[in-house]
Image (cartoon, rainbow, N blue to C red; front, side):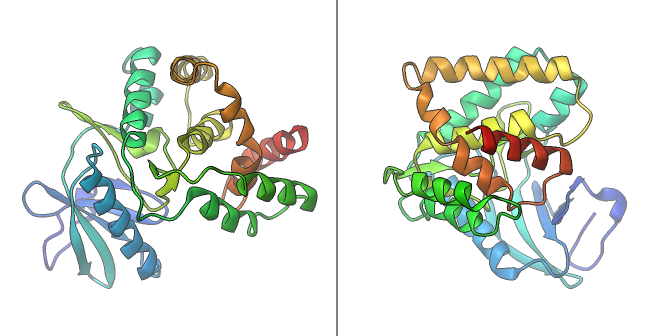
Length: 262
């Protein structure tokens, strides 16, 4: 367990490319970022997390920054449970049930407003400029579409996928708010759909994955009745902006094929 002065790696609860999660005192955890991770990005994630929690989103309560052994961390309320991705990978529950949990939590995010956050179109536009291998005509077309994004204040997570959902005994919560923004929920849902269709974070049974995606899509069709074309509209800028991220080769190839088709 991490305390103010000691770290035991065996107590690590989770780990990723940028941070590790450890127990921290009573009923809390600390998301401890790797050495060299930008301090301003850590502070931004804390700021976004506070906005989301204050807006009423089911998300762990953020408490502040700490330093330990040359690393900076954010202390959060502890919310135990597997990630939704782990439940999908293990086929622990029916795909339809997991899709309902996922969809309902995303809807809870989009019911909130966050006027203090950056517009999601502006955030994606910055990424377009960094998208390696993206043909210039596609870059210009994607940017032109983003220029037409409606000026909405709805809270958008920006990276809503099963790894960022923890399913506890009492409730499901969403974590990792670094990419949060405000804007049209259709853009946020499109980002989720592009991720679910093309990203391969680990070994998941293809049939179960397809069933989860179809169940999520069915709920989208109900919620966006008569407006599914709004989700289609944003595929080009969302897929193009995704190329600015460190995606696997197979996903990059699939995204470029999608962009060419669009």
